[in-house]
Image (tube, rainbow, N blue to C red; front, side):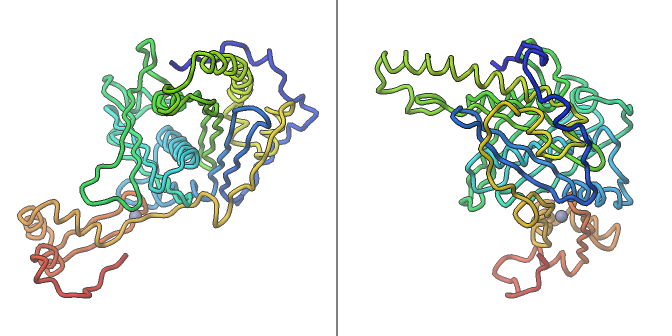
Length: 364
Ligand SMILES: [Zn+2]
């Protein structure tokens, strides 16, 4: 089970302040993702900073007159989810969408963040009723112990009838306590699903949604099914010894990572964060992903998808909405785009496939 590192942050040396305590937040910085390895150690890391992408998600919500902007605690949760979804998507080799969802039993009924392999992302939350300005995770989604978190991997080219993989985690710790932070929930999930120790630090405000992920890489014979078969006792002993030593490295790095404060994560640039935390470690950096190749907002909604949804309602329900309002109007929760279907459009949706006019215009 996940263990919180017990050593205090003072036991390890972070960079002294002479390396710079400047707050270097710049306006209009593009969202970026940085990956790195700890040279010679089985530990990897990633930092994501969502700036323009996150501000776009918030701005679209704020301009939706039927909902208005997110209450600040919900925006903070959703931003953390967006950062986490980006990190988790980048952490797996999977050609499809990673969808992080929280189904709440409090004022937040559902919160969703979705990230694709091209780092396009979108997020939305449904909030009903008021919530305190200082609401924490349990106050929003786990009031009656029924909240849960789901991680879905939806393949890009899935065959008809194939159900996407979904892992569900409760919002409780090992001692049965309600978890107060999304990072704790996801650390649990990563340990259970990937059998790998993971340290996550997440934070969001109305400008930036950011996250740091540190993960222990699998050593030989661990974290995969082949590992337990065909190895001799001697190999096992060797692997255990390796693991003990390697865990020390991971633990040290994990403690340093956990010492990153919310304020630092939100206001410092990536170079400063890495220098402050890991100035005594040797990092191997990958080319940062920003701009067109970096995290960016994109919505995949389209008129045909909405038509499918109306088809799902059934012809009677659709007719009753048409009788009452004259048309069926559906807004996308992610991007705010409105789709309108009048009686003629609706009749087309429910026409048997053989009767459909080929090449009828569909807005994508
Ligand atoms: Zn949309």
